Image (cartoon, rainbow, N blue to C red; front, top):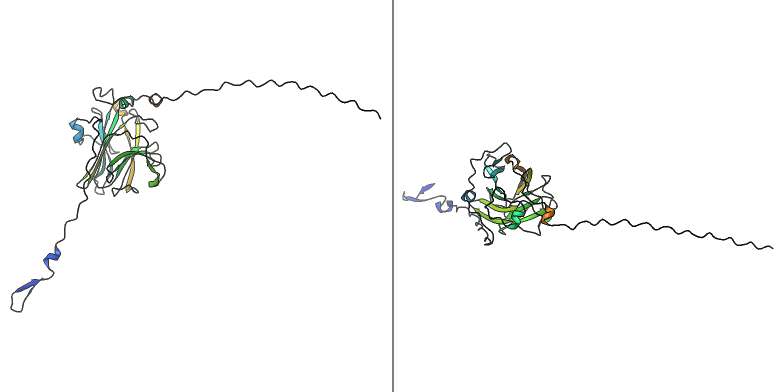
Length: 277
């Protein structure tokens, strides 16, 4: 509102326009991708780097698989407007289908790898892993922690943050984690079969559980759920060697039955002669 001075000229306004200037909200600093190990073979397929999968049809469960190149995507969570909130993209590689791919010896023995990329339309931690019963407890998730710039395998033993512990063997390859423009992206490649872990089967359905947080530090999940992904429709079989062949177990030794000892006959006691009074 402008007001006039005593001489009729414009004297000023209320409120002061300078007090109406509100600085734009500050953005969270982006997390740079981790340094990649030079010993890990990186995929040079431009299709995977771009994840060009928008043409893959999605079924009623939110999952779509292109069997011609064994890649697909799954819409795990949506916003209230129906836009994707958490998207899982994946590529399956096995020695039979990809004979020229430079698998490591462990990856070849495991029957191949499953490369996963999660795109979360928010800045926070994300997790995805296998579960036998579709429950969080006893599942084996990969958790991406932006503040620690870490992508690792975990085990969940109970419904508390203290029950989420890293696994002793960390074997993920091609890991990457980044945040930009309010979007969190995390990628890793996991062997299909690993000793002591839930296997990723190519001939049957696999149940994955997922969870996301509303902050970068690991805390109680904001949203969670599960999804079933099956490659059986593509007509491929498991190429993995059985776990017992990957980590040989010592054969069980069946103890031989011991013969029961033959009881020795006890001599009969001779009665003492009675004394005559």
